Amino acid sequence: YWSQRKRRAAVANLPGPYCAPLIGAIYLMRNFNAKSFLQESRKHLAQLGALQRLWVFNRLVIMSSDQEFNTQLLASTESSCLVKHELYQLMKPWLGNGLLLSSGRQWQQRRKIITPTFHFGILEQFVEVFDQQSNICVQRLAEQADGKTAFDVHSYVCAAALDIIAETAMGTKIYAQQAKRTPYADAVHDCGAIIAWRFLSIYLQNELLFSLAHPLLKLRQSKLINLMHEFTSNVIEQRRRALQQQQLNDSVDELGCKRRLALLDVLLQSRIDGRPLTNEEIREEVDTFMVAGHDTTTSALSFCLWLISRHAEVQAKLLAEILQLLGEDRSGAVSMRQLNELKYMECVIKETLRLYPSVPVVGRTLQADFKYTHSKFGAGVIPAGSEIIMSLILMQTDANYYAEPELFKPERFESSQSSAYAPFSAGPRNCVGQKFAQLEMKMLLAKLVREFELLPLGAHIEPVVSIVLRSATGFQLGMRRRQSEQAKNL
Ligand code: HEM
Image 1 (cartoon, helix red, strand yellow):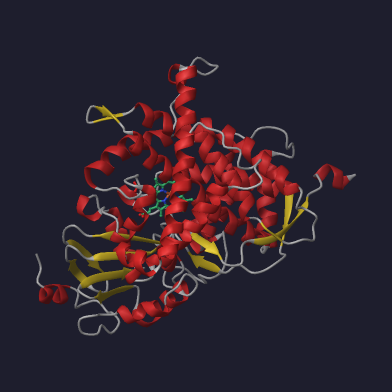
Image 2 (image 1 turned 120 degrees about the horizontal axis):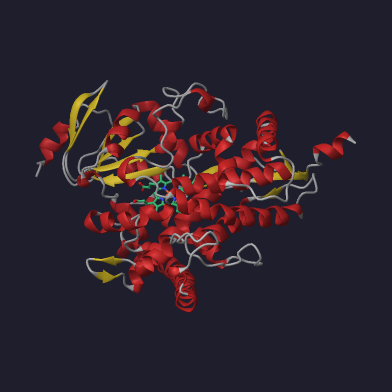
């Protein structure tokens, strides 16, 4: 237990904004909304530096886009450093104790059974699904590819990403790309926007005050959550029935190898503390993975396609690599080995996630004192109970870590990688779907760029912070079908 005086003394070495008696720096939040958040945070970074302390009433908050501090905290394996920030609890009615929100023993046990379901061998089985669903995405986009009309690519990518996560991790087809509407994806979008709005307002973070001040919005949030839960319960039910009918768990593939079980199959069969997971526990994970598994990759791919459409030289280099490694035959399946060879594409994806990390900010609440060392501030201790907000987006676009940080230059990743780079977070609570996401994004990008020329048409992006990063103007671009090299030479 630290007295208020000792807590103040512990962080006296760090700069911070003016904090008024009793209320602290709460006045700063009046300028924050989804649109202004990035700009405002950049302003504070420029004024006070990458590592700051501030007080909100008696809460001590450390704001860090500092590479040294973030690296040490994220890498820590102490369980006291692995608990998510209180604000994540706003997502609890939606995601329950799924992997993203849970902590302590519960998180540890679940992470242990879930991590192997994203093992290399399983991902290899998924590549076929990535391939087929990407082909459908290409077919759908062909209708837009008139070479002159700007359109928003987000909903196309989103439907493909939804189909992919459902068919791979959940073993269930949901046909989002064939449907006229995707109510589940719309609900994710709307509910995410409400929660992100609440993140930025102190009084709305309180469940009771939110209900009293905005009863209709609270009702809407509950309805959206019910809709999403119904959807995920259906996915589970479908898979449960399929498992019962076909005994898929014992099945072997055509080479006689035992089929590796995907996430939902494992959840349906696992035992924790000697008992199977309850329906509710399974649904929490399915909710978590359905949303974390499609919304993030949709954001990354949308930004990536938009950036490629605005950088002709990057597009040309990318196309050359795709044609060299995958060839021109668009009917053949693309393998995991081929995807792994697409090294320039890897740089394009990395550079996109540097500028526009799908999860721009992550937060923790320290359960014990955290000791750090810093080249400027020396050795220090952040007291237990402090809240840590780590801005990945500010860290990755800081001129102290990157030359010309605002420019899209995939080549910067060809030689070395800065340690001020963590779009998938790092350490024990890093993204469990990182490899999955990279392969999925490579497949979609390879197919789309091989088939279409991406054209710089329509509005500029306007990044806004929701739970994942979005753009207020959407992701507008044009597309034109490429003629094959052979046809051009005739
Ligand atoms: C471009 C794509 C993606 C990005 C940039 C991304 C980023 C991240 C980040 C930054 C975190 C840490 C969050 C925090 O500390 O609060 C995280 C956690 C997580 N991600 Fe991803 N993610 C991506 C794709 C995926 C995919 C495809 C899946 C599932 C298949 C997934 C599942 C998860 C889960 C379950 C966690 C929580 C892990 C834990 O706390 O143990 N993510 N992701």
